[in-house]
Length: 412
Image (tube, rainbow, N blue to C red; front, side, top):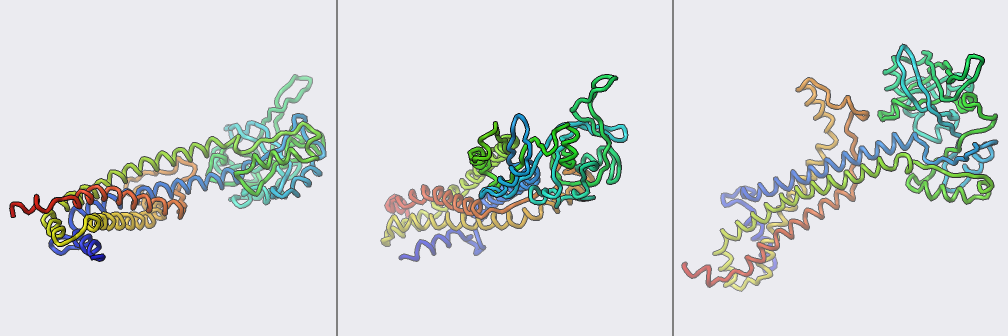
């Protein structure tokens, strides 16, 4: 009798006419499959967007900056010492200010960042996202690198000249006015992120000159850490070092400047996951209704089984197996659909755009659907759906096990 629950569970799953499955079983499987597929697709796409933001935003903005209110003089020794610490990959001087960039009767507010081009490969991903020109073309006297969105907006290309008006004031016999400099565009990058419209790079020494800082001085030390999510701990460890305790140093990290963005993404992912799990829960009710209908139609067979000595536990397992078969097939098909559809979302969007003759993604900075499958999420989804299938199967299965043969067969 040990194989009886498995055999009867599969028998009740199949159609009376010999088809693979009954209509109610197919509807239950379809509901679960759509719910699981939707959850896999949405979570994978959100994982992809989160990873893209981490790569394209946190790969460019400073992870950690050591600052001082009075600026940092003779920064070379400090950069060398910080770069030699265990939790640090590399360090470089860093200057940031705001300005107004103008060209061809158009202007745009920008963040002007002074960098050391020779150190940028170890500090950010920008060298890998240059679509024209090179960061190495920046010099202490000339050169600026801008984003692709900003270049299109201003209508400029490499070798064109742009004007930058800085917040640094200049005094003359005519009065006090902001300083304006003309620079040649030597490179254009494209991150497909918001930084494409606001980030402008110049040589660190040129930034020192623009802001009238002392020679061999800088605003801060930019630090790239080994653990992106432990920057605050690294910052406190740096401030505890002997070579940083003599001055009024402090630090800022990406968690202070961009942390709310990633917290919002994680919260949104949780809320969407909860919503989709509720959809799967509603779909799992189909399992309950399927088993209730099966129990109702199989009451006579249940009564005969009990008179032949079938225990309540065995009867319960018969319908639990039925629910597990539906849950397993629904989960498997849903995962299969999700794993097939997710990598091809871009093709589906392109098809919709061609049929509707309109662009759906051009208004976004990331004009494609990134995705990332995470095995832990797929396992969690599968186990959760199977557990729900068991839970919704148990109640009608337990009811079937408690049916009294005398009551059922009285009128036979």
